[in-house]
Amino acid sequence: MTKLQWLILWSIFLGYLFLGAFIFYQIERKLEEDLYAQELKDIEDPANKIQDIFFHHFKTDLKLASQVKVIEKINSYCNKTIFVMNDYIGQEYDTTYRWTYYNSFFFALTTLSTIGYGNLHPSTSLGRIVVIIYALFGIPLNGIVLTKLGELFSSTFITVHRRYKTERYESRAEMTIDIILYLIPGIFLFIFVPAIILVYFEGWTFDESVYFAFVTLTTIGYGDLVAGQTNNTKEFYDIYKVFLIFWIMIGLGYLVMILGFISRANLQRERKHTTPKKQQLSQSD
Image (cartoon, rainbow, N blue to C red):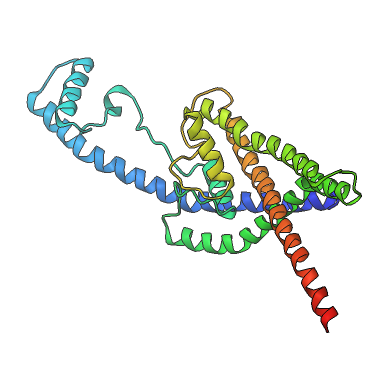
C-alpha cells in the first residue's frame, strides 16, 4: 500500500471508532446519569425526612461538628448510609460514571476487534441494536486494517523467504533460526514490555499482566482483568490509556501476521505432498 492509501484507511478506521464512541456515549451515558440521579433521590428523600424529624424532635442546638458525629454514629450502627452529608458539610455526592468518552472509545475498539471483555456493555435496547449494526460494518473494516498491518510486519519474513529461495541459506535450519530470532523480539515487545507497564499502572502481579496481554492479543478477552478502567491518579495515566489503544491495534496486527505465516506454511507443505502424487497419476495415465 502507498502512504496515501495507508492514511485513508487509518482515517476511515479511526473515524469509525470515534463515531462509535460518540454514539455509545450519548446513548448509554444518559441512562447512567438517570440511574445515578434516581439512586441519589432514593437516598436523599428518606434521609432528609429522618434528619428533619431528628433535629425537630430534639430541637437540638448542637454545633455542626456535633451533628455530623451523631449522624455518623447512626450510619455506622445501621451499617449503611442513611444520611447524605452534603447539606451539612458541603460535600457533593460522589459519582463515578462508567461510560466516559474514553471507555466508550475502548468499548468500540474491543467490539470491532471481537475481544469483548464484557466489563462494559449496552444496557438500553437502542444501544444493543446500534452494537449489532455497528459491528456488522466495523468488524470487516477492522479485519482489513489488521490484515494490512500483518502484511506490513510480514515484509521482513518475505525478505527471509526470498533469501531462502535464492539459496543464500545453507540449510532450512538457518532460516528457521532467523525466523525465531525475529519472532522473539516481537513477543517480547507486545507481551512482556506491556506487562511491565501494566504492573506499574494497574498494580497487578507480573503473571497477571502477562496473562492479560496474552488474553487480549489473542482476542480471548475473558474480562476478569481489564486495563485502564480505574480512577488512577498516577502521573502519565492518561498517556498510558492512550498507549493501551495503540498497543491493542498494533499487537493484533502482529498476531495476524504470525497466523498468516502459519497458514501459508501449512499450505506450502500440503502442496509439496500433493504435487508428487499428481505427477505420479499423470505418468501412470
